[in-house]
Image (cartoon, rainbow, N blue to C red):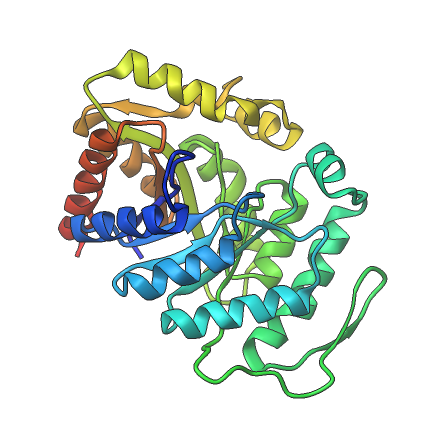
Length: 307
């Protein structure tokens, strides 16, 4: 899939969905290959991905990532099938465990036994997405389709997991199609994510490593870095990200952000590929509209060079 972007609209948009679709068209015209949508509380990530993918037929689309807590595999699978049919096979389902305190506070769901839940969720979900049927009865999840539920027009949906810890990577390698690491720099990718993922996936198709990178091409480096720190700094409070940052020798996600000219951003992207990423997704929402479009043009140029 090459290099993609995370995509979001603004709070001042007249219509959020229309604005995101417009941005997606501009990014695709520049040569960006994919657009990814985080799950929030003002829009549904699968729904927005399906709309964008249908409106912009050259883009692959995906979620990054939907927490499995508070959801059921059948309902998530039905959403994924719908998005896959709507986009003609260009939808990628990204799942995650979510940060424990955040999940408990916002969803009122106990964040207990996350690895066990992830394993059961994937075990129940994969056959459903491949065949339209599943019958799984675990300790935490019961999933049984009462009738054949394959959706005409929906090809099997790739499943990716925002896994970065050893146990989550093991489950992901065994049961999913790849991982979606965030705030994992090249050192962490090369030493702590790619090797255990490949080991866990032994005997299966090589897993994807869709690495997310905060980056923007801009001449206003200091002001942009301040905006970036304000937007992504909240991630530093979560233990899972603290661990990944510490493994790379960092204390804050802003230290990993590539903010500067085309040469600097290109070097950061290539470092992720060199470390084992199969795809790179760039988040540049903290840049101005002009900076974002300049970044998309660079990403398109890099995609064309690689083709």
